[in-house]
Image 1 (tube, helix red, strand yellow):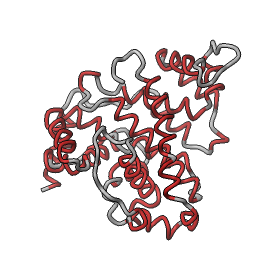
Image 2: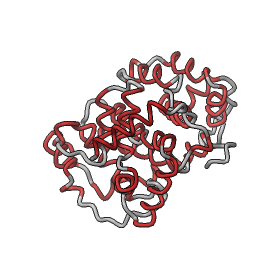
Image 3: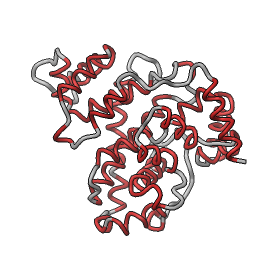
Image 4: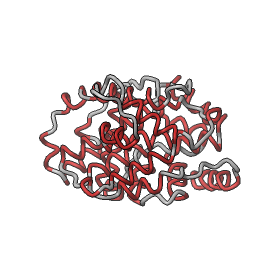
Amino acid sequence: MKNESLDRLRSRIIKIDAMPAIPVILRPLLRCLDQPAEQVDMNRIVELVSYDKSIAAQCIRMANSALFARSTPAETVRTAVLSLGMWRVRDLLFSNSLSQVIPTNRWVVDPSVFWRHSLGCALVARRFAEIIGYPDPEKAYLAGLLHDIGVLVNCMVAPEEFKIAIQKAAAEQIPLNEAEQATLGFTHCDSGRILGEAWKIPPDLIDAIELHHDIGDPNRGGPLVAMVHLSDLLCRLRDLGYGYYEPRQVDFANEPGWLYLAMQFPGLADLDMARFTFSLDDYAREVGELVATVFAGRGAA
């Protein structure tokens, strides 16, 4: 039955004229960031920022904000990029370019809420990676950032049904994917995989997109899926979800993703889960500042 629903979904995606196209800067940005941090080309990042006047203006505005307390104003893109740091600029590039994938009037969820969750999950996934000794924390960050891109597809191909699914999730206080399955016959994990394949996103990131709610056999997706799964859970439990409360108790020590990571990375045993969970409040503030900057003047935040 699910395969029939996915076949219908693929058919709708193929036929729809407004199917999200990969943003112009996203593919070169992915290539640029798919390298060790010390090898990322700052000149290329400045070039990508300069492609979009609105993003360039946001970088300069953020660099000149009280948050960074510069003694002299940043007046050029290069100065702003150096002031903000490469990874904060990366956040602006991603969130801005993906937010423009679909028209403002086609968003079924509040885009600022969507980005609070995506960026929060990215930060938590990177922190997980650092703690356990995963060799590529920035890949974990990227997986967290992109894990819910299927939401973009559902906004485009099934806006009315998706709206009903969101209302059902909020009313029943259940995970969004469960409400989608009941209403649509597929979830944002399914549609996200289809979009990821269309955009030629690397396979390991596509696995994180598809499996982050139901990791099944952890060996299939590996540590990247496990980290995104746990990060998504943590964010939804700490007010970085989709704007409604999920009254659930999670025993992380017995979560399949946690058990898998514990076998692969002994460093997980050193994680103080209570302290780590409370640190999400700091992430929430950081994410809030970024989202406010991205949506300033759009009336969406």
